[in-house]
Each structure stands twice: as C-alpha cells, then as structure tokens.
Length: 448
Image (tube, rainbow, N blue to C red; front, side, top):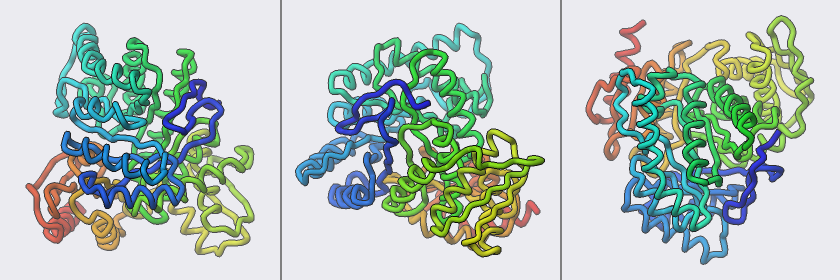
C-alpha cells in the first residue's frame, strides 16, 4: 500500500516500491558553515539518507549553498533539504540548488493571527487562489532544477482560515493538505512529498491515514513523510515515535521517516532505522485484543527492538481497536521493566496519563538556548503531575502553535532567554531560564 508516485530526490529514490528513507535535521546555526558541515557528516555517518537544515532568513541562503558545496567536495552526495518558514522568497532562493524544499502552507496565507472569523465560500476560494498565486514562482524554479517540495502540514501551525472551518482536528490537516495537492497539480507540479505532523500520536496517525485514503480516491498517491513532532527525548520520545511511525509502517503507509528527539540529531537516525527494520518483521495478527485490552507477548532480548515492537503494536491496536489497556509479556525482561514500558506506552498514546506529559521539539538552528539541558531540568522538576502537559519549545516559529494543547510551556526567544506560556497565552517577555522555571512552578501549584 505504498505510494504510487515515485521519483528521485538527488540520488535517493522515494515513493512507489522504493525503500523507506531515513532523514534528520541539524540543530547547528546554518550561518556557521564549519559546525553545520561537521554535524551533517556525523548524521550521515549515523545513517541519515537525507539532511535538512533551517533557512529562517535570506542571510542563510548563501551559507546553505556553501555547506552543500563543502559536502559535495568531500564526496558526500546526500540530498540536502532546506527548511523554510515565513518567507516564500527564501524558498525560491534555495530551490535552484538544494534537492528538496520543505515549506509550510502558513508561509503563503494572507495572515495568521489565531483569530476567529467566518468566510463565505467565495471568500474562502479567493484566499486559496491568492495562496496558489504566491506559490507559482516556487513551482517554476523547482521544475527547472528538478527540486522536490515537501508540504509540511503541522497541527500547531494551521492557518486561521482552515482552523475556523474545520477546527484544530485531523480533518483540518487533511483539508490543508488537499488544498495544496490541488494547487500543485493545477500548476502541473508533481514532485511532492507530504507530511501530517502532530505531537499527538492519534492525531498524526488519523490525519495521515485519512490523507492516504483521500489520495487513493483521487488517483495519485504521493510519498508520505512520517513523524511525531515534539516527541521529546529518552525512552518517552522513542516510545511515542515508534507508536506512531511504527504503526503506520505496519499498515503499509509511509515512504520517509524522521524521528524527532530533543537530543543531538545524530541520535535520531540509528533509532529510526531500527524502527523501519523492526516493524518490517511484525505481524498485525500478533496484536491480540480482548475487551479493549491489547495482550502482546514476545521473547525479545534486545531492549530497543522490544521497545519498538511493543510500542508499534500498541499504536496499531490503539488506532484499529480503540484499546484502553495494555498487557506486555516478555521472558527476557524484568517485571518492573514491563510495568514501566506499559505505563510509558499508555501515556504516549494518551490512553492513561500516569505522569506529566512533556512536549519538546528536537531544536534546530533557530534555537538560541540549551533546550536539551532545560528539558532535563523541566522533567526532573515537574515529573509528578499526572495529566499535566508541559511544552518546551525551541523558537517562536512553531513553538506556540505546536504546544497548543499543553497546559503550560516555555518558548525560546532571544539569546539564552525564553517566554512563559499558559496554553496559547504568552505571559512574559523574554526572561532568564531559572526565572521561567520558578514561574512555571508557581503557576502549576496555583492551579492545583
């Protein structure tokens, strides 16, 4: 049930019957050529088959070209993906030399102010037409240079027009994607990869499967990029990623994957490869469900393979059978480890919240503080609030939107400073991290 459309991105084949491609994203400053090249080399050595770098402004366009040139001079042909936010002109500037450009539909909307309003069908259609017109120069450049485009639909950055008509729902993600498929096809552009991202495993899975089915009905199934965004770090981040990505791969959906961890990006690709390899051996019929409880039994000594197998099976059973509980059995694992993994998987799927839920982004070149250290501090300080959701986000680009269902959070601002949020409400100007953590604690205690 893989995608029917297949094409090359650089020397990598994607879609159709091509193998699943594993990719990752740097967290260096793209203006720092040496650091970015070095990190790209480490990521590629660890299995990254495609590397993405942020290009937040026109300043980074030239340095991205230099990074690519330096890699090519070293004999490294790994495709480079430019991650573009806000400015369509940046996308157009990089499209002539990178192998793929990742855009967000929010780059092309009239405005995005999280406002509520009602549009007539005519006004709605006119807004889509304006968006299409703004994208036409990018399609022309990409067509001339053989560049692919990833349309990155994120639950946290849906435009007001979509949110007001469809809510902040899986259907809203699907409708945003279908609009862009129409826009691309009307422009006779078909070198498209599409992703449906959310920090909620269920939302990500539902939106992806709905889109896949909609594309099948339309007759053209484009390659799908899988990822649970803001998955976090450590065991929790890996479980959440394996539950969402693994379950979809079990269903035959997905052509490229990125595991998003709040860790060095070199850590992402080895785990992503293990997910792809492990899931290929799983059989859906081994997910035994009785009375809405999944009973999964295996004899697996390798801890990572066991974590992936159990998480993917649970994600599959959660989506297909609406399970409400999980019982794991593995004679190679201690009872305590089984109980801990059960709790972590149930938490990742939001079936049963037994501890604080942490939503944290993997960071990128836009992040101007030590997010990995801060996530560790937040987890240590606020671990014991079952049902509470706390976001730790790298920057303002996606931070406030993508942690929108968090109760509280901090978002990177200027160098070394962060802003504190309560849900979507920004409570502070940029402040020091210790001050932000103290404020979070006060807010949480006051809400108890």
